[in-house]
Image 1 (cartoon, one colour):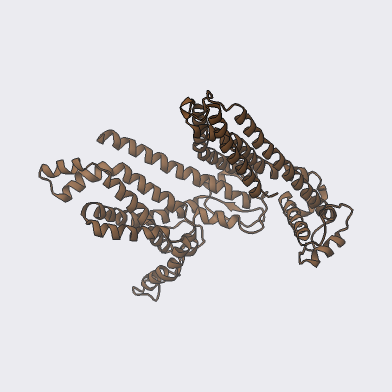
Image 2: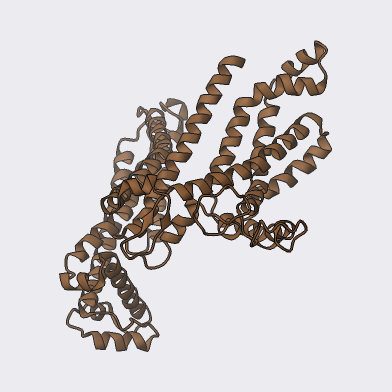
Length: 490
């Protein structure tokens, strides 16, 4: 039984619990809802929640834990010489899962039964022939030990799925029975339901925090492994980025950090003035008809995929700058050798960030009380003086937050940089040269069949953790500025 059908069964049990719990409550009150402690739907909701919530919670935990348990169990049956030949447990487990998927496909197409697929006495040649009959190729690198591990993987998966289904359905039934048995007219169903809803809301609020902690810990552990293999001084204070997978790599973050900040600064120089001026016009000068047309049109920019911006940078903005600053360009200065450059990526990224700045700033400016504008105008200030000296200062904390949000978005951008800025990590003040950023190097280091025990691959996690700390610093700075100006204007 698949997870989908299991969830449907749990919801069906919850629906039955909803109906029967309400009926039992009304029966205990002799059909008069005024004799009930709570409204009838609270008794029904208590039955449904008691049946569904514990069962779905156990199902979620089971789905998260089962793959790790099975992988660790299967890894113990793989001989050491197979691991040594493959060089990595991850690669062997990838083969195991691939063979297990092939066996599943053969069973689905009727080439073999479940018993035959799990028969450890079956030879690799026979299994390969049977899978070949249904168009499933194992590949020439599959060993008998991998086949045995795949058979054990399938058996454990099947057993785990069966136990999961039984346990989840039993928990749903037990929850239904317990809630049904205590349903009567004096039962404080409303208190129980509201307390349960409160717990669910707290769990939802904690989910984002726990997810963030999990992400940070996962990067932190791999970063520690990286620094066990690579000198931390070279990473933080070196000046060269040159991974070569031969054991003598120079993996310094400083050239990548410079490229990231340089491109982001240019993007903000483009986005902030245009976005802020657009927000001021839409909120203070534009009429209702113009605003209703212009703001949605401006926000369309936020919905364009970044790959499209990358193509725009590569095919339009880059050649345009080359025609101006190239050796054969309009100025004939030869400052630009190709279409990719820091300026290309920065301009296009700034265009992408305009709706982030304008939309948020517009909402913030509109939230400034009208009484402040009226007071300024009543004292004889002009409209422009009111905007400069009253509205903008009052909205400044929110505007700063919008700008820092755009900065975080710029720092984390990848596709525009890949297609518009190039892939060379270096120090340079020339915006017409090619550079690269942290995010593009993370993608590059994790692309392909990288070995997760080598520093050239593990460096991606150190880069990711550094990027996280950088964006966290921006958020702390934004909080400081917001608090400072709030104390001034509240």
